[in-house]
Image (cartoon, rainbow, N blue to C red):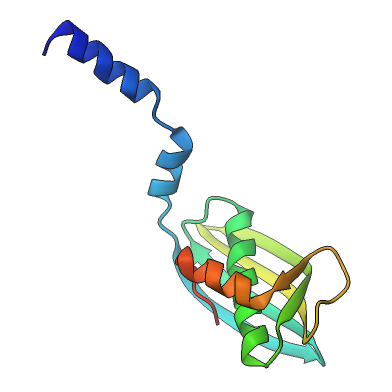
Length: 128
């Protein structure tokens, strides 16, 4: 390999995006969703997965479950109330609570169920 080719190769390697490497190494295993209707429009979702990069991956999984559940029940929206996350032995678990509603609820953490379900499908995140 010529010196110029080697320098070019090293320059290209230096430009590699480390975030892209992390994304390509992300191999989650989604271990299921448990759903419980608490009262009226209040729904609890328990999700478990391994291979999560952070609690944000559990938040995404729970949000996908909530969005699909809202659609199944004939609603178009949900609002996130809270999520508790823990990790033990490489298995992450989240307990999330959402309200579901036919119209856009008040609050900052609202989701449009159809948009979120489409995003989940694009990203390979399972729903209910």
